[in-house]
Image 1 (tube, helix red, strand yellow):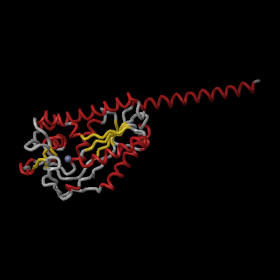
Image 2 (cartoon, rainbow, N blue to C red; image 1 turned 90 degrees about the vertical axis):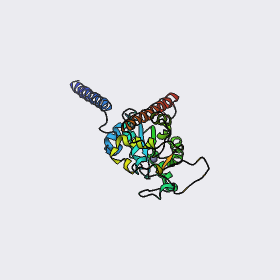
Image 3 (tube, rainbow, N blue to C red; image 1 turned 180 degrees about the vertical axis):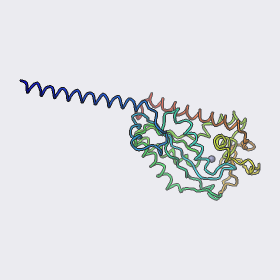
Image 4 (tube, rainbow, N blue to C red; image 1 turned 30 degrees about the vertical axis):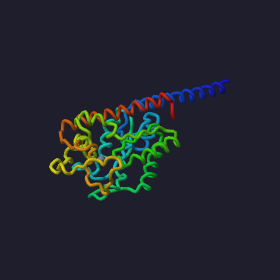
Length: 285
Ligand SMILES: [Zn+2]
């Protein structure tokens, strides 16, 4: 009898210890869930913290896609720098991590200019798709492509479609300069352009030291060709106005700050709204 009691005591003691351990683990998990990540940049996280965060705590990733090509009097890397700055500004608001930027893109019509690098389409498309596919495989449910370069759009849309349906995740490709079309017209009272008022102001907001108004001349800009009218390779100007006579850079610091804030607000709003609608519809949840 005594022996049986001792066995029982040992068993109940072990059970109590296990329960206490589980409770401690649960408390620890709750604590780490409440704690903000040490950084939102994937490249700065260690694998252990990433594993704790995704997907248990964070389901969304922002991936900037850019290009290295001439841009009037702003940096050649503008198409990467802009979505990267955007990602840093909005990541906490949309509760996302930030994947490393793809700094190279498809820019064959501009590769003649000093410092430009263009990746062939047959190399770029599968590479871009592999990045999105791997992010989905890592557990992200919402993969948000922040594209900075129009030449990438067709390839990115195709990659987004394939990855979304193959991996059962949600992918959103955002071309910020088009999404912000009405903001451009409201802030500058004019249409914009490639390396025009809109892109120049956006970069000036966070990198004023790399914007060079002293190099700007009016004749550096050309209007975009009306659809199908002509096609020049290399492009004749790196400032390409969406509309003739409109979209020259203004180099106004106040406008730059206002534009940066309004564009980022718009992009954040689009992401939050799209994720909300995906959740509501229950697609790939
Ligand atoms: Zn650009």
